[in-house]
Image (cartoon, rainbow, N blue to C red; front, side, top):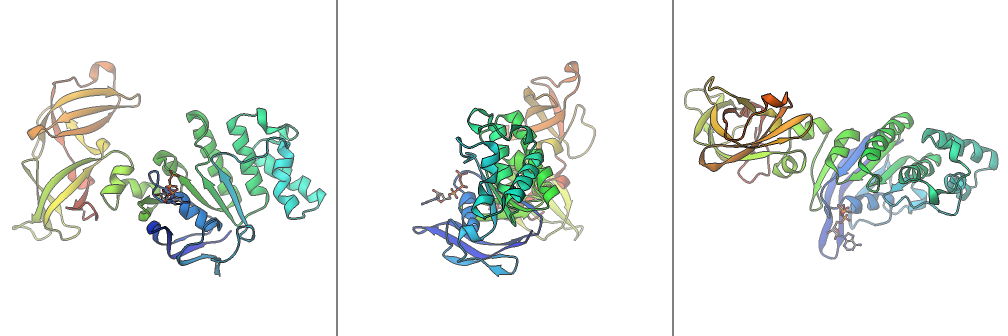
Length: 362
Ligand code: ATP
């Protein structure tokens, strides 16, 4: 178990920066996820940690040890990949024992450690089977056992669940999380699946175009996205342009002009000018009657039943359409297409970005 430090790490392919100035620390025992769309640099960053790539700029430390020039096999890393990478002709036991053999661990200890690892992934009963006729989930468990049996200081996982079906992915991700906590092993996990990242991680680094956009625990990433990219990539957001200026009557308030309506918000950071609000669909309230100030009249455009919740597209003045989600109710209570509703945007629960969308200002 050790902390991992990235000190201004940049990795080029040609002149393009696949990883651009990564500068952060992963704590001991942390489950840390690199999340972002395809091509954002997640795998490249992971490969740099593993030692498959050498960064052109910056340093990487495992604990206090600079590992820039330490070869992969000396980094004490366990790895699990999307394609399992297990040997089809060897038994489950032999697959898991492979790394120990390479490290000259004796027979008795090998037997004990392999069985311990197989028990952790609940495969002890299949020790003498060959993996070729086993399910994807079982094969991925073998890969996991093989990675942890060497007692690595760091576990790297690159999209380990991508080849599994949706139900199994959910089961496996909670198994991985449990195992990681039991072993208390520093883990770096790569995925493009935001739900998976939110479910398993202690902290998430959201990446775009080689740059880390935000590092925070899942609930903070969702509630306080640092910029428009993060707000858009994690969950659903309605983006609405607004005009923001200091209130003349109260120095602690800002005046917001949005969709032709004026709102007041406490000032958290001084900001004047055009801005962009990100509103989460489940935080917007719908009223059937015009019960108060600052409600905006809208019309239900469409109703989509999603099981636990219902998604309504609501047309606001000037043809602006927002997505609003409510908990599912009895079928006869669903709002109807063309029905008039009054929308409480709850701006105090929204995030406001500067005009460029690059920085959260509220
Ligand atoms: P995915 O989820 O699709 O695997 P990713 O976020 O892991 O994507 P990377 O594979 O790290 O992204 O790629 C980052 C950028 O670096 C991309 O533009 C990619 O085309 C480029 N790249 C990756 N590997 C190489 C390579 N070996 N040679 C040249 N360019 C590369």
